[in-house]
Length: 143
Image 1: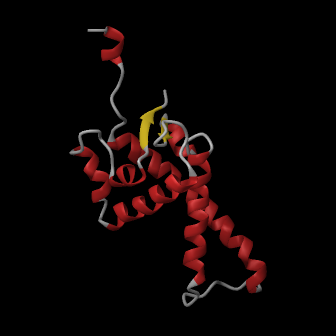
Image 2 (image 1 turned 30 degrees about the horizontal axis):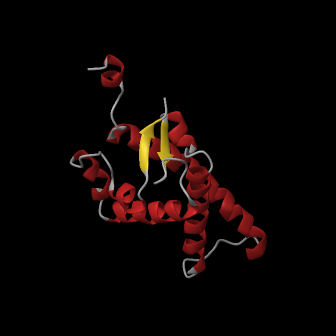
């Protein structure tokens, strides 16, 4: 048995991925505030009302832009970089925009299922969440 091969860590665990999610959540909140501020000149400085159905869709598109850009340009969001995680696509290189979209939607479904899509990692043979399987991407250790 090769000692170097046995010393390599397995896939990143749930807690590291959760740490990156928290970090990215804080950053995404700032991005969404900025995206909302961009709209204020168009609303005359008034708050955007709850009846504006386009506004949540706008915020989802901004969130996808944040994650999609980082996933397709180096495979690391700022939170993933901090926690030494990297997203690889099905070709084992960076993710494509199509893979990023499927991953983003799948992660949303994982959250809507009360986090079960993420907890699935604990029983999955490859330690992959639902959105990893759906998008045919995976998170690897980047250190």
